[in-house]
Amino acid sequence: MFHAQILTLFPEFFTSPLACSIPKRAIEAGLAQVDCLQIRDFSTDKHHNVDDKPYGGGPGMLMKAEPVVGSIREARKRDPQTHVVMLTPSGVPFNQAKALEYVEKRHITLLCGRYEGFDERICDEVDEQLSLGDYVLSGGEPAALSVLDALIRLLPGVLGSPESALLDSFTEEGMLDWPHYTRPEIFEGKSVPKVLLSGDHAKIDAWRKEQAAIRSKSRHLS
Image (cartoon, rainbow, N blue to C red; front, side, top):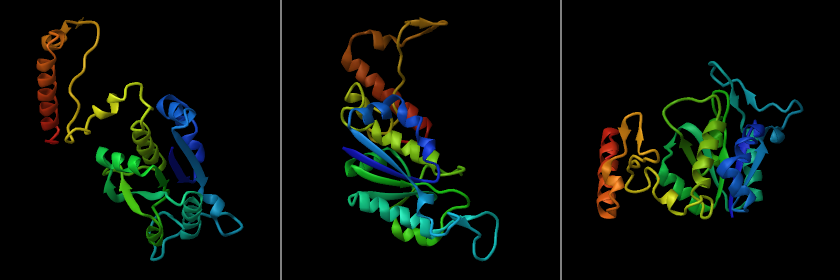
C-alpha cells in the first residue's frame, strides 16, 4: 500500500478532494492511505503558537521550529520508511519523473508551510525540498494536493486502464501527449483527422508521435 502523510495547519483542506474521483477510489480500494497530522498539536507553549516574528526584522511571520520538527518526528515514528518532503519555492522542481520516483518509495510525508516560510533549522529534519513552480501560494496545501494527486493516479490498479498513466504527458521522453478526438466526427465544421479514422494502426501511431513532438517543441520541451 502507498502511504502518504500530510503535515499541515489545515487538515480540513484535504477532506473534500480526497473524498472524490481517483483519490477516493484508491483509498476505498486499499491501494493508498492518507493521514493528516495537525502541526499545531505539536506546539510547545500554552497558546499553541506555531509562528513568530523573524530575527533581524522584516514583514510577516515564520513557522517555528518546535511544532514543525515535532510533527516531522511523529511522522517518522508512525512510518519509519517515510520520505519527508518540504514544499517550498526554493525546492527542486516537481515533474513526472519525480512523481514516478516518489511512487516507487511507497512512503512519503509532505510538509505544508504557511506565512513567510519556515525557520531555516527545520530544513535539517527533511529529506528533500520540493517546488511546484516559480510562483507563491498562500500555503503548501494546494501544492501537496497536486503532488498527492499526481502520485495516486500512478499506483497500479487505480486507473480504469493500466495504460492510461503510461501514456500521460511527460511520461515518455518528457514529451507532451498528442491531440485526442472523440465523437462526433464533425463538430461545428471541424473534422477529426482522417488518419485516426483509417484503421491503419501503424500510420496512427506515427501521426501521434509526430503530433506529440510538434506540441512538445512548441512548449520548448524537446
